[in-house]
Image 1 (spheres, rainbow, N blue to C red):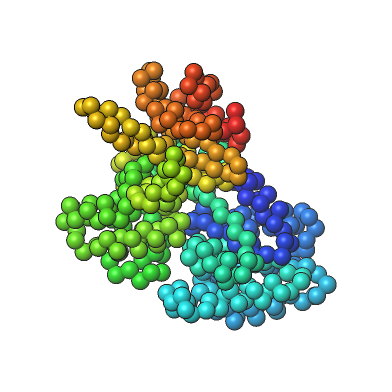
Image 2: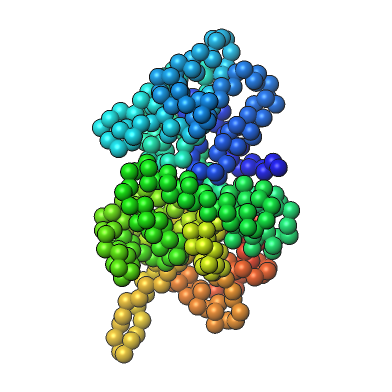
Length: 429
């Protein structure tokens, strides 16, 4: 089964031969290797590039274990570049395997892999592409280590617009399946629900949790796993390390301190499992700091952590909307609007929440996720924060119902979930 990922493929095509190292980042098993070694590879072949001019080095393959040594990697690649008059494409998969634990832990130790990549850039007949599953050693270090010569393409699990046509189901069944099992591409190849659940549970325990524990040398894996479950249970809720620490303490687990929780959250973000969303004061035009929201990059992994027992469609829909906005390239914050109300004859400050403050260039949208709008009272509740925003940017409520797009008397646009998810221009209706 070939799943089209034209959004990312077109990004790679547009960056071809731009003189930068293309760094493809994303959660494990989200399709980075498929994008590079299948879709982009096939594109190059169709463009007339000879197969022997595409040098592939999958570092998570035992056949290439020697190339995990940066010097050996450099020697191997250079041995394949045999003609200075031909143009070569270098594909290095899971590049973090070429970074030692000492280099990972100690910021003062130079990472030799970066020297290898910078050396390849000096060759005029070479175009370099790298994939990696951890931001700390690739994407967040690009500007300093590559000195402006790195170009990141971050990819996510399948968006619903990618998942739906590949599923072969009607959009309602595909949506329920997507909410439950998420968008990791291999899910579409599993024959039944039992196999899907087993696959996700295996990934959580054997790859994601083990990977983080080994990479950061965490002594108590149970503490990390518990934190992941706490975050998974709190989708759509504002929280911080202190609140999470209080949750641990209330459950009788006093071994995981607040600083440790802060570190664990950082590890989860660096591994792309979760994404942190900052709180933004819309009227004051400033970030508030804490608390923040955390969303899971893949809903199936989130559900598997909780043994598929906490299926709250309201929160999962909000997470899916956030993921879609990120997929489209928007910057997203959680918004708050401060108002004053009368309580017992006194003016009291109150904060109203806006689910998403969405920015891209000069564009801005304010979005509320509302599972259902059964009556006018519910509409008024959902739009209360939106109508208090003192600017003219577009304000939108997305609901799960099959609602036609319409604008009410308050100037609020209301649209159905599928209108939003299946049309990339939906915010501009």
